[in-house]
Image (cartoon, rainbow, N blue to C red; front, side, top):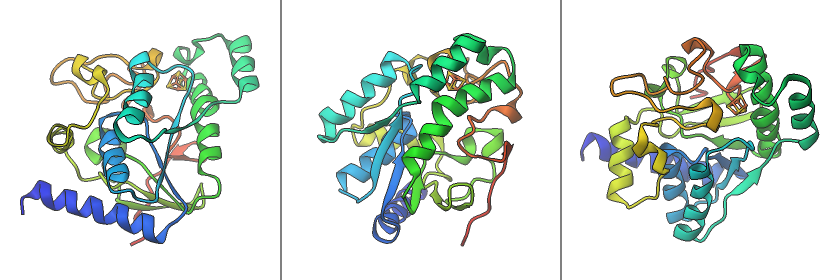
Length: 237
Ligand code: SF4
């Protein structure tokens, strides 16, 4: 068995364990390449793990197009969670539509309204959640474990692709004809909201296109933050 096959087998085993022992469980898909790998594994194997996305209201058309691609390929619709309209309106009226460029605080407040609050709603009532995060993606993810005790949400958090490389992800996608966001072919290894994501040059860090006006240590959306600080919680195992 190759190293890749061993990682794939371990990932499948993790997903099967989640589906069997942590129901209800949900997968938070950003519709990026890693998330399409997990979507494919979950839906092709009919694993009992729900899939949702956060429709922030600021996504690229190409990213929204992935919702149709998933429906057409697997016959399953991804559940969408959207921000509270009143909170979005208040932020825009008070600070402006693109105030996230003004300071880290304004950026985190926008992420709180458009991502963190909807995420908390999406996770409520579940025993575990799954992400497509990988250690190699960012300076803030070097200690990422496959399983974490997510104290903030009161549940287990699984990162089944934690030790996958970017090459692993694309090998799986191409080998299994998995649909993927066309922005990945245009210099976007990491894709978030349209105004906060840009293409990168060859050799640049994969997260260099996300919140590029901030320091690397600030570059998380708050989804994996506790009490306003970046905290990597060690594996429960
Ligand atoms: S990524 Fe940008 S647009 Fe999206 S929620 Fe965060 S600050 Fe707002």
